[in-house]
Length: 418
Image 1: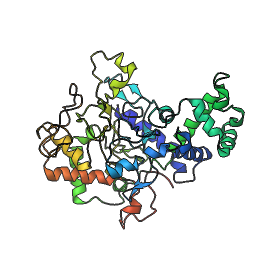
Image 2: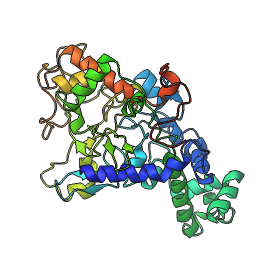
Image 3: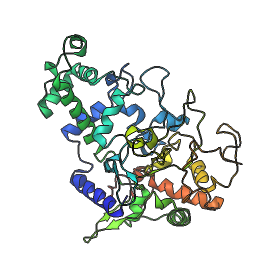
């Protein structure tokens, strides 16, 4: 992705909410928050967006918007609404997802950029918000009309959709009464679209986009890194090569305003992750971009197979397990993998007691593994530890958990106006 495009995206987004940051949510955002946490919108009334993207703090530090069961127990994938059903991929954090550009192909370098989910199949936040409701494993609703019928059952939704969007839920027949008598009412699509719009509005609020990690306060000159953290930052940007994909440069405009980095370039890579045998039923490896028919139609040589999205590193320290299949249990382990993938040796699989100690298993999809930026970096143990220490400075809500006299509790983000 071009550096200038990334800067424009961040600047425009910061301007769009800076004057309202940390203020009360708008009516639409409050509706989105209610929808985001509503288990009644799943088939068995047991699953919501928040089930896999929790609003609660993790590790006593900050919300990271991942599945708390995975983060605490190390399970690689999430449970769905249907008993014993699980996904194939580790649920990624949706913190800072609002900055993601729409999925597209960069003409200059031929790289796919942007989009939501590990393979970018949702072009934007609104599109992403729709898909879990109808996914047969996640919330498992059979169709949009069924989702809207669940909305009809709640008087608050009836009132709010009429107030905010002039859409009359009460006037739409319940799916149980109408599905065998008539076609899906036109209003169903309108309501479903507005539901996704409200959830996306909530995800664009400052609750998901705080820019108040220790890194941000150091960037603004409000506090200082430890020696190990500072060494880690230099390694991250230098010898480690991490910043080649996880962009770390801040930008300053003519007025001196700093645009903080998001630690991703929004592109897709096959980093050579090994298969995770802890995923129930041992599904076939997920091919990332290679799972998408429209991409395969223009990719006869399968050059996009195995490529998954480069996710942001913000809050990375509190979002284990790691990788699209959750194969790595700790930040230390995945850092060691990046460093030694091609030099440590081989073990049979990730259940081997020597996984990550004397070797790594072969890649899920070996044909187009990225070998230019990782695999044989040559970091020492202490250098790996320093990079991990630096990445731990990317956790939100530093004023509350950092116990830093230079950044006392309730200190606002230096990049978003209170």
